[in-house]
Length: 222
Image 1 (cartoon, rainbow, N blue to C red):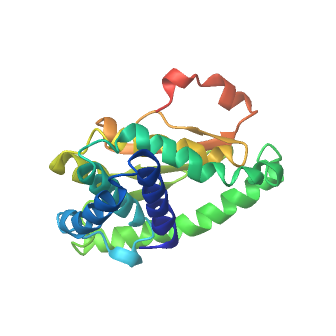
Image 2 (cartoon, rainbow, N blue to C red; image 1 turned 135 degrees about the vertical axis):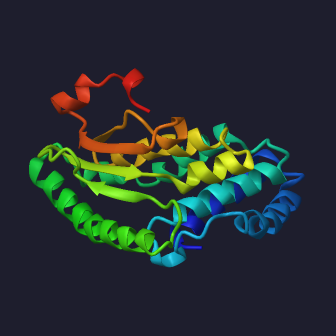
Image 3 (cartoon, rainbow, N blue to C red; image 1 turned 90 degrees about the horizontal axis):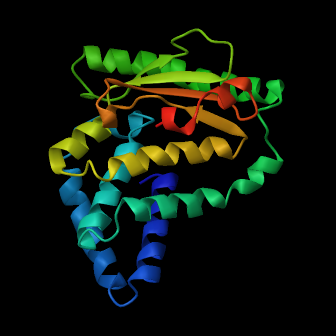
């Protein structure tokens, strides 16, 4: 597991001890036993070579605790844990504010620099018959100068969840994507996801005080 995986696992353990103190040790032990069993059902999407593969690890971790707790550590629990985890980083709001165009530009350049070569790597792997239905990336597909725009084509999380009965957990994991941009005064505008039946997930991060952010209502965003 990577550092983020380990941090989220600690949140699961913390949540379990808080809400099920008498059963916590047994639930955690069972979840740890279940993880490799559930992981064995996952498609090969490149492991550490795939910079997004940790997302699938997190879904399987969630499923492990969901099963180990007899479905009591569910989607609502995932939401609560995500809010507590990312709440620890709210100090960033006092440091970074992408309503300042120069700060948005720095973050945009960094993200595009990261995802452009990744998108090329994914296409090469898929062409070679590797990495299955991993996330294929379209960087700034609409050629917008505002914010940061990335489309993800395909989703191994949705594939795994559908195949193994965890579609009830997936929307809660997707919803946590909205928490991270809040830390830098950004808003994620996403109108469709693979979890809801689309072939792509659209990610458009804009400054939260922008006209664009105000134009999209909560009902239009998923």
